[in-house]
Length: 356
Image 1 (spheres, rainbow, N blue to C red):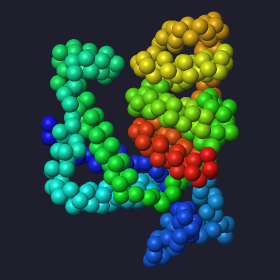
Image 2: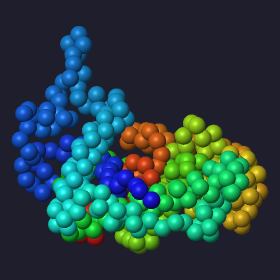
Image 3: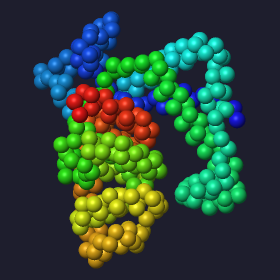
Image 4: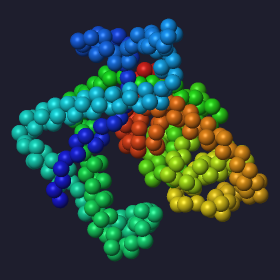
């Protein structure tokens, strides 16, 4: 199999950031800029406009357009971060090509293409069984080729990430671009781990979002790696296109009313069986968790947790959420279903920063 080397796959879109003052994260002076605005794009006068003698302040501007301004700052950092990662990868690869006396094509073949294995019939059948909702009723025989190609593409991505990680270790890559920290309240939302943990991950998610299923599995991997050093807070962000997601979120809160741990059991059941749920489906999950079904049904029908879900959505929008999943690791933003390595990179640096 000949594949193009997706070198940026493991590294793009990792940290979101904005201007963080006049000095860099290590206390060094920033690179030369042509103006104060270039050095700090968020810099603005205290009074941005005047109407009939009444000033409009920068503070008012920040409050009025909080969500849009955060999105703009995140987009700015995304562009800078992607440019930085592209340069890092290019320099590492060029050093490796020189060191090994290979062409880029030979390097791709050696580290990726030649290591990709043909998926077994069992692996294809397992993928088919676990992703029935994406098969649209197509029989297994019809999906053999597409599934095998998809699994090989996954292998290529994993091999590429592993290779890039090995180059980072070899060439001692350091990053000094600090992520934008956004204060996100945990409130009394469902939590795994202690609030006193050195790392808090606040997750905004949608039970009907397929990318959120991938992210949920990644988060379990992250929690398993760091144990009590990490606390996870789940907040709801059902998207308008997912009509049943809001009621499913209410169901998770109804389960939580009976037992705190039941929230996470309900959470897992929803992600394991994504579909346009009916009320009976949600009640069935409650039965599976051995909850009081009558109490659960009464709670679900009362809509009493609709306000809880809407408050999460409003809080998410206020901190720049527009799609799912989204994570705030000690306030540092991770957008989308990123690989576990993205979380590891941020968490390791945060543990070093806070001495955890």
